[in-house]
Amino acid sequence: MLAAVSGFCLMVALASGPSAHAAHRATANLAAPDTASRVLASMTQAQRVGQLFMVGTPAASVSSQTVTDIQTYHVGNVMLTGRSTAGVAATAAVSASLQSKATLAATAGVPLFIATDQEGGQVQVLQGSGFSSIPAALTQGGYATSTLRADAKVWGSQLKAAGVNVNLAPVLDTVPSAAFAPRNKPIGYYQREYGYDPATVSTKGIAFAQGMADAGVDATVKHFPGLGRVTANPDVSSGVTDSQTTRTDPYLTPFANAVNAGAPFLMMSTAYYSKIDAANPAAFSPTIVTGMVRGDLGFNGVIISDSLGAAQVQAWPLGDRAINFFNAGGDLALMNDPAILPAMYNAVLQRANSDATFKAKLDASVLRILTAKENRGLIGRGMDVSSVQGNVGWQGAYNNGARFAYVKATEGTSYTNPYFAQQYNGSYNIGMIRGAYHYAHPGSSTGLTQAEYFLAHGGGWSGDGRTLPPALVLQPGASATCYGLTAAGMVSWIKAFSDDMHTRTSKYPMIYTTFSWWNTCTGNSSAFAATNPFWIASYGSTPPASIPAGAATWTIWQSASSGLLPGGQDRFNGSFVQLHALAANPD
Image (tube, rainbow, N blue to C red; front, top):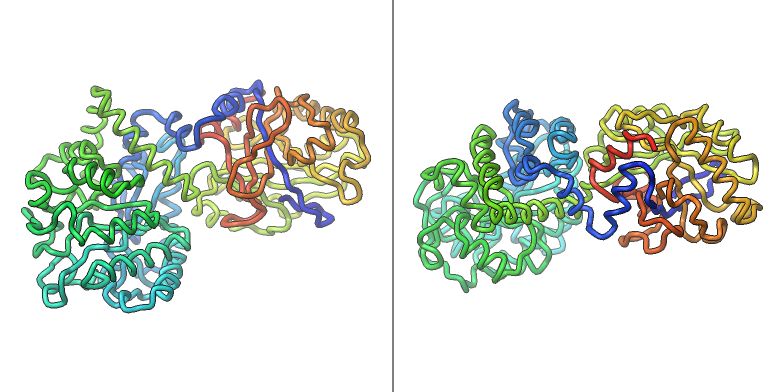
């Protein structure tokens, strides 16, 4: 919904027809696949492989090796490691710096998953101003379930404000007893367990995960099939083996329940499980990863490894660690040390380029990761703003996944947005692709007159790859839905505006409307389907079902008038590569 000077809100539904410009035409021809599939199709093989890795960087800074991993090896995910007392604002700056490296060349413009370990107790990476002191999981396990979920939402909101969108928690490993806990070096020794029975662990761990989801952060249940029975820590010891857990063990129940509750990430242990697969660590075991996680649990989300730099797996060459994990059925290879990434990446890329079966397996994993990013609102997300939003916090919007913005420039022939410069330049300076829009008053002056007014006050275009086509906003007038014009008169008005914009800028304007308004006021005209992309306002979680006649699909969809981002909540119907092409190519 876009606000008029009068306070009347604009709601528009967009559809994009087979336009003459390449990006619009490409979008129109891809109406069937989901956005994640389109992004996958736009990526090079090198970029696809980069999405399969998560590397570390110190929580209070950005390491040069991590930057190299993103820019040279196309890594699509980063973990904040160590300990930081810098607080929320400083961590947000680190996250923003990392996200700025996720460029068109590096990641096909796909934002990063930024993760950390924020369990509580002795495992809380991020501390300082703005972060709560989170109690250990064993203490959390004594909370009422509703209280824990509410608290986890608060903790998750702090992560979200810091630019972190994945928490590598909760621990769903069950430690057999309080007496055994001190001997259980990876979990019980640090009170990382929620209790000493699967029912408590399940209920409280899921409450924590749901609280994170409520805050807009993806939780990661770990460490399947459990580290609660071992006595050594696979992070620092080798040969760590669980000799008790079976494929039908009751201690697997918390993981099964978390999957049923919608857990988006599941982390694999690197320990051995002799009663399930004595020959392979869990993260390298097809029996455990594919057979149990995908098969027995029915998990369709992202399977992430525990650190592949851990002592437990150091007997394998670096490249083999990654290949073994992916061959077992894993999706996202994690390593704290960014310096070991190149060897793994090169080995995986080489195998993908020579082995079609392996490549297909990797593509399926990349699609799962991209789908998780789409579900978290990191792909195709944009916004539209006007004077109602005032000075916009562009860094925060960027951290929350916004990659494009439309900014109101003018209305009729007598209004200019007093915040236009801050909004239009601010979105550009933070790294977004942005465009300007004109709020039409078709009954007050001609289309040509309003186009010229728009052009004189911010409605231009340049083929810099960062400027969207100028947009024309069409919605009911304050006194008359169609501004007193007949359908034929409205089509003529729009054509005069559109043709002048094209003559002056070489771009046909994006048309923002609802199908209802378009149907009523233009008679569902198809006159613009071959030239103008459509921006459709259709509120809810389902993309527009009705679009203007002749248009193949919508180009931008406004799904809500407010939300996580300032102003209207928008989605682009394609990949970032296509969005960039829309902003770069004349019609």
